[in-house]
Amino acid sequence: MTLAVLRLSHRIIRDKRITTHLALTARAFGASEFFYSGDHDSKIEESIEDVCKQWGGKFLITHIGKPLKFIKEWKKNNGVVIHLTMYGVELSDNLQKIIEILEKETLVVVGGAKVPGTIFELADYNVAIGHQPHSEVAALAVLFDNVFEEEVRKKRFSDAKLEIIPSERGKQTKKIK
Image (cartoon, one colour):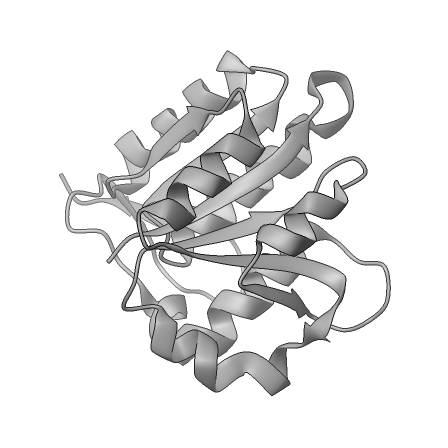
């Protein structure tokens, strides 16, 4: 099973932090791949690769030139597409179906600048995490948290060099390799 995230329409000037946070959330919550379209941004790629070196995990980040073609290919290869949008059907109404389809190759699409209507048509599921404007990062985290429950929050990577020591106060890490 592959769980991947596609971020649409990255804009270097405006979106570097949000796209980075989407990739970090995808990685931390169980995705193995992160794709993004729009502006190619090698700094984001380097940043995520550095995180993986320190905190572990095999996680690929790739720029996609033609996202619609990419999504069509994903579906052609029997993959499932979940589009996170505030205009979709409430997550709780689709949760059981989504949990069941995660055995397949699954691509979660999150928007950027104006999302083309074709995305709504291509998606197998248009899912809303509430019906108010909110962050794509929040939507992705809520989706993964609901699907994987608490196991995703306890995720550890065997090849990590650093680990957080949970603490009520302060910040503590330890080197493990």
